[in-house]
Image (cartoon, rainbow, N blue to C red; front, side):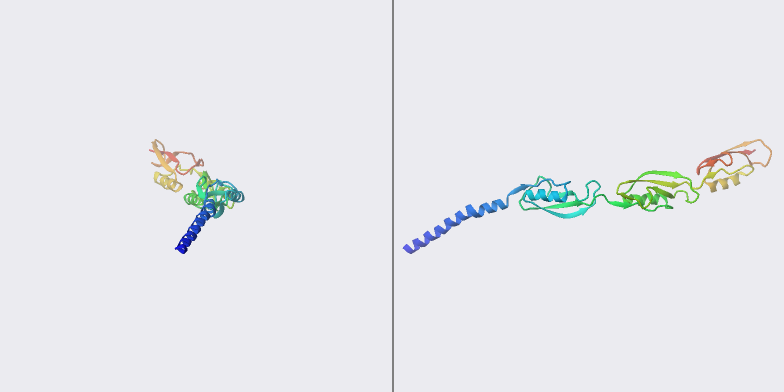
Length: 234
């Protein structure tokens, strides 16, 4: 009986010692290890400064992505996960996305390319088209790009604006239509891209229907689509 009682005392003593160890040694370690920390905001900081700031809070920084950014300087934090002000356990890894700076793109060579295709190429590369200007050219067909400003090969950042200069074709001078019939005039104007407008019949000597007066006058500079008016013999 005494032996059983002694065993019970030993068991009770071990139980009490275990409870004391758990309360005063093990639990404080667990509570300290799992304490919650508010995540600081390290966005827009350099990687070095961000890691230092996290380490101060007993957190770890890990770079998980690098990508271009038009605003954030190269080597600085764009995004962090978890986000700032979230409560996490100490020792938590904070995932960091680092900026590679603005993406640099070379202006493509577009001379001779149709303006619609050229616009599409520039937009796909991420450029904005600031302005489209039109000038005459004896070498580049109408509606095709002569050059860009800045010129091809210049390095720009994504989103930068480019001006495009497009050909209106060669300088077009009004032909002399005097003495020609309406049919001959129509054929010639169609080739030049000019439009036949009002035809006024007047009394005069010569072949009926032949041109005696035209507007614009011969050798005047005209543009494709301009309208030509005539006076013909009645």
